[in-house]
Image (tube, rainbow, N blue to C red; front, side, top):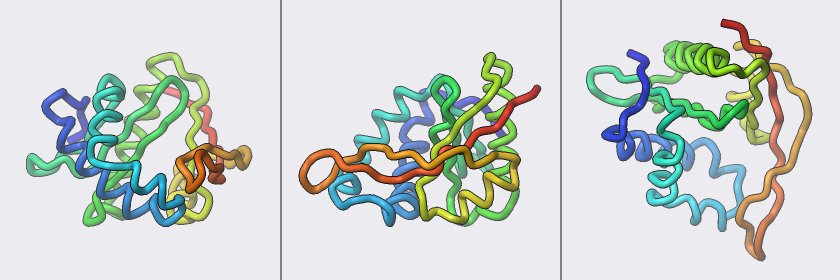
Amino acid sequence: MIRRAHASDISRVAALYYAVWHETQAPFMPQAEIIRRSMEFFIERMTALLHSTLVTELNEEVVAFTAWRGQLLGQLFVAMPHRGTRVASSLLTAAEIEMAKGGIAEAELHCVVGNERARRFYERMGWHHKAEIMEQVAGEHGQTDVPFWCMTKVLTI
């Protein structure tokens, strides 16, 4: 079941976010950014994003979530046992519909360069590679750049 997240979901969503980010994104990040991404970091982020978060709940367990700010779809994370089961595609479609209802004509997401599985998934879902961009993250001596694929999709309801 896909639904809007509630305040009571924050700790469960943050725990999922923490686990999946460290599994899928950390291999492409500097050690300082990995250390910075503590459970507290994810709780704070999910508290801030609660108003635009959708979750997929199966058997009373949050197994996936997505969140966005404006036109930027910033999060789509799925627990490992639920990958390849259409959970991600259903949730992404639901997020695209909600974004379009909110007036977003073209959505954007940033997929870390090297995460080929995610890029292939987004391309199968109709997203297009627009450019390679750099995002600043914590590095050994302050901020450092990490490359991301900027992907876009025209949204329709």
